[in-house]
Image 1 (spheres, rainbow, N blue to C red):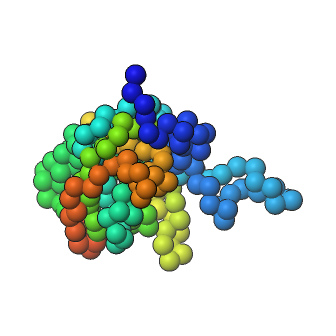
Image 2: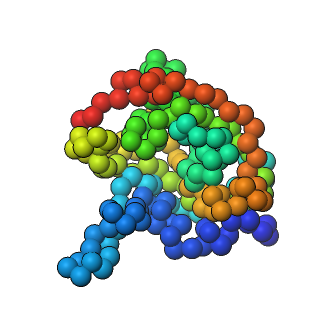
Length: 199
């Protein structure tokens, strides 16, 4: 039986809640009259997260904003190779840029990422991840512009993309790498938002 390097982070209750889209930011928490937190906001995330084991050597992909590739590699949200190829095929079929295709299929509004960097990495040690389909996103729009609404379309096979949420990368990637970065692709952030509509 393999030993999973991020087992403690995966087993922590917060790991699954974050995969479900729970926002633990203090400013977004629902509080009672005495200021005690009674609930946390939930937006996006994935539906019905299922445990998934990633073998060492598995290729994974992640989109990020303008930060160092190492910082992007600390993020929890990833795509496996088959799902990444699905995003590429969707972009080619619809004549759109890959960053915009990722937004539409993975439900990532510009407020969450400018999708200006794409990294390809390999799992360096066996890891546990939550795997599931994107859930509907309702989140505040940037610059006080109301809310962003992105309903999931998982009933359409062409738009059904499983994502990974890998807990524990932020804590370990700098000291004892759980993934190894292989390649960095720079994307035009304008292309990744061109055609995105706020409905």
